[in-house]
Image 1: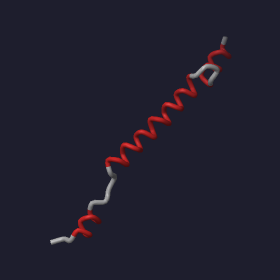
Image 2 (image 1 turned 90 degrees about the vertical axis):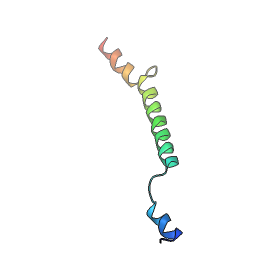
Image 3 (image 1 turned 45 degrees about the vertical axis):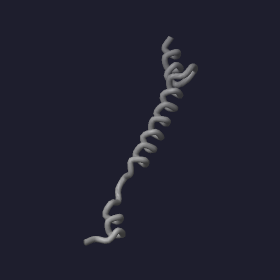
Amino acid sequence: MKNIKEIKKANKGITLIALVITIIVLLILAGVAIATLTGENRNINKGTNCKK
């Protein structure tokens, strides 16, 4: 029978908390990127204004 230390070593992996934190960080970065590109006088608006 395995002891507790051997069981803990075998259970290495991504925890649910680490996964949730990673998803939250990615969502924040995506939100900032979208806000930067679509805001007033930003990159997308400048490109469409040049065509006029």
